[in-house]
Length: 138
Image (cartoon, rainbow, N blue to C red; front, top):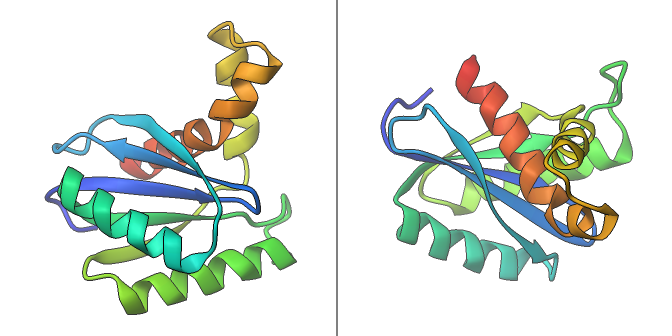
């Protein structure tokens, strides 16, 4: 793991993409934002803007394996996204198993008192924060 600079985590979804950000010392992870998924080119433009704005040195892409660890169509789609981002971006890009992150995010948002509608709008960024937190702990 590259030890300097912030890490940006990306939780890719068909409709929305959630982002989370580490602090510069790579101790904490916090939800950053959720954007509509408007295609690969717009995602790359947004990523380049965020990389510059937040001084990102590493991007972590969540890879949603099935509970048993097998590869699903969504897993394959995210693996291809990871491959494409590695080829385009000028920073390190890694994949990370995020199979329980959405469930954990939903649980955390409920504990925080979010209702269903509020949670729906934050779930992707919170899921990214959940797997970024796990990445930082390892």
